[in-house]
Image 1: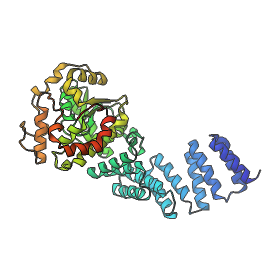
Image 2: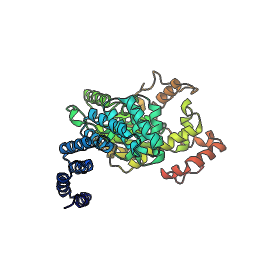
Image 3: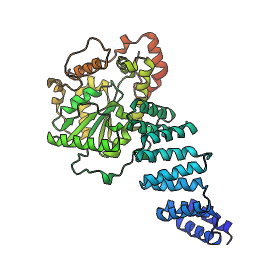
Image 4: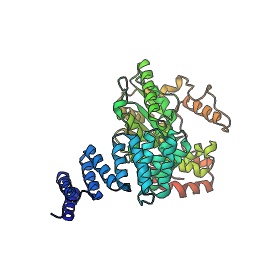
Length: 435
C-alpha cells in the first residue's frame, strides 16, 4: 500500500477515534518512509491522544531529529511535559518552539502555554511577559487576560490583576466559570490530614453587605470567622495551602466545625477556591447597583462614578455564571435587611447548619475587626475613616439603607447609571426597581 494511502486511512481512523488502527498504519508508513519527519509527528499525535505519552515523546524527538525547525513538535512536547507537571522541560520546549518559528501564526498559543508553565515554576515576572506577548498577538482571547491576571495576583499586583479579569469578562462574560488549568494543583503534595473540607467564603461586589453577613454567620456556634479580609485566593499555591491549614487549626482550637472568610473580590477567584477546597461553599452577596455606587464612591479609588459602576458590573458578572451552582447561595442585601429570619434560614439550610435566631444578636458582642474603636466617623476622607465606618456598621443591628441613591445621586448621575448599568440591573434581577 502506498505511503500516501496509508496516511490518508490513518488520518481517517484518528479522526474517528480509532487510535490503535491509526497508530498501526502510521507505523507501517514509517517503515516505508522513515525519513519523513511529518509521519513521526502524526504518530506522536496519535500516541499522545491515546495517553501513551512516553512513546509520544520518543516520536516527537524523532521528528525533531529529522527536522530541527519543527516548531509544532517542540510545542507538543511542551504540552505533554506541562500536563505531567514537568515544568522545566515544558518551558524549554515552548521556548524552542518560539525560537525556531517566530512567525508562527499560532504563536500566541505557545506564549500562553509558556506563561502557564512559568507560573507553575514560580517564574512570575517571566510569565507576565509571556502572557502580555500572547495578548499582543491575539488581544481577543479572554483566557489570556485571565491567566495574566492570575500571574499578576501572585506578584501582589492586585489592582492590575483585577483590571485584567475585567477585560476578560468584557470579552467573554462566561470566562470566570470556564475551566482554567492554570489553577490546577498537585493535590498529592498537599497535607490535608487536619483539614476541614467544608469552609465558607463570602464574596460579591464590595459594599453589598458582605461584612455584616460575616458578623452574622460568625456568631453561629459552629462557625469560626476569619476577622480580616485576607485576599488569600490572590496568593501563591504555597501561601494558600499554609493559610488554609492555619485557619483549620484555629477552627479546631476553638472547637468549631468550619471557618468562614470574607474578601469580596474573591468573586473573581471562585474556580480557584474549588481547586483548593472542593467542598467549600460560597455566600454570594448582591445589592442594588445604585446604592452600591453611592457607597463605593465614598472611597478615593471609586470617587469617579464610572469606576464605581464598572466595579459593580464586573464583580457581579464574574459571579453570575455560578448563580445556579449547587455550592453557591446568592443572597440579596435587600432580602437580608427586610426579611432577615427567612433569608438566614435559607442560608443555613444551604450550609446544612441549624438555624438559630440568636445570630441576629451578633451586635451585642462588640467586634474590633476593622479598627480599634466603634465610632461612626463624621467624614470619609481616608482609608482609616473607611475602616472605622465598617467597624461601626458591623456592630449595629441590621438596618435598612435601601434607596440612598434617591437623595445622593443627581439627575445627571442617575442618567449615567441608567445608560451604563440598567441592562445589568435587569440581568441581576432588579427588573421592577423604579427611580
